[in-house]
Image 1 (cartoon, rainbow, N blue to C red):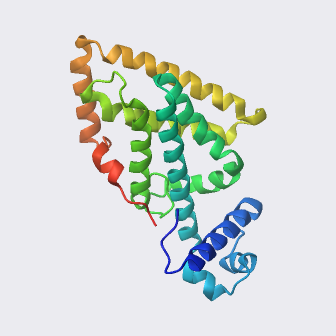
Image 2: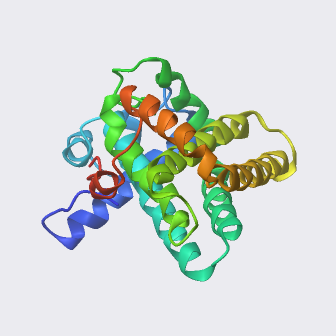
Image 3: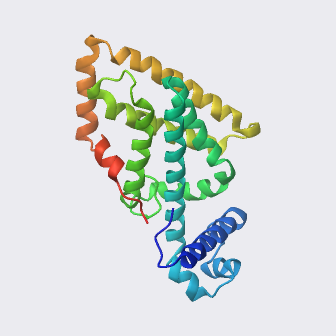
Length: 235
């Protein structure tokens, strides 16, 4: 989850700093928390805290990476446990929602950076492109062995990733118990996606697939799935 350190003790200390910071972000909010607060909560000097994380942004980037690593692990388990595409996709979407259930306030605070493309924490900015690519590759994993045309596989993975981003936005505003409406929304989206796959597999749809792939490629949106899987962690 985090950068390698020279000693096991250093690695454990880094985890402690990161955990203390996330607890403060969740309790006080990102803006109200200072690095001095983080150092005090971790039981160390400010200088020592800066040795592990030079800024709050670095802490959040480590959080992004940790979330992605855990989601990738859960999806790998789901792909191994389920053969049906619907079950694989359900596990992929619901595991992400379950992981973030306690972080809706933090995610809401981070969402404002999306409108600032050059901000290092923007969900869609160049600084987080590696995480974006890794996440798209994770959403491609349930498609393994599925009947998806080869020329549509990258587009399908991008569609799933984009749908999950929309679901997460709705998730932040969902006040239903346990955000059950968000989970139903995810299930409905999965059903529509599977219906769409049945249509795009038709031979008559090949020209439409080509046009869509070309459109997304020209816009720079279509991922290279091989490159996405190899994208390094941000830390």
